[in-house]
Image (cartoon, rainbow, N blue to C red; front, side, top):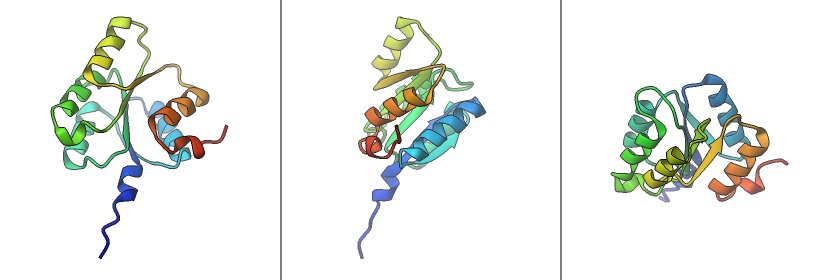
Length: 137
């Protein structure tokens, strides 16, 4: 019997406390050919990752109640099985120190608010290996 788990890595974890942003991100991820798994805060995201590490990538809001995006990445980087998941931070911050802290924690990219479809498409095509072939221009 063949155990095909390739579909599991076609999932992207989204954590944002804003329901409108969650819907926008989920729609963009789905349009890119991935399955969006959506939670509304950093603690829920970390619980999800602890129980299931099979994600192609993660999109985290920088500022969430409970556990912010940077701290969430720091927690992820302490567990070997979570270290391979690339994380994109979403932020309205313009402070270079905050962005530097995000990169130091392990974020691979930032997406600035306000979000647009073009920004999302570009970010997803960089973050997800096959996204560029699935996103309509």
